[in-house]
Amino acid sequence: MTYRYTIFEQQLFHEHIGYYRTFGIEGCVQTGDGWQPCIRLPDVSVDREFTRRLAGRCTSSQLSPVHLKDAVLDALP
Image (tube, rainbow, N blue to C red):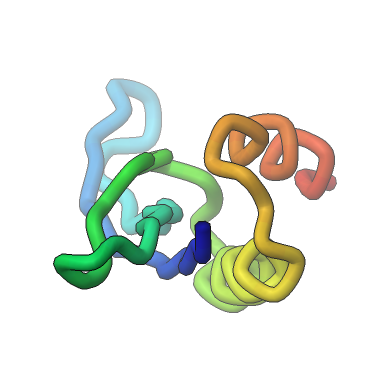
């Protein structure tokens, strides 16, 4: 299987800080019918570039979607 990870943007609300912009990672698997979403992990970081680089590393290493949450937790400062 081939996996591709991309970022998506959200605006969320937290009672102590109000609205904020954050980025998540979506994983897709390539099937005979094209790319199908298989995992979506919201609110990874408010840093777009950090999230983009992490998604790129997940794609280049062909990370299994079952390990995405662990990969994100390991990458956070």
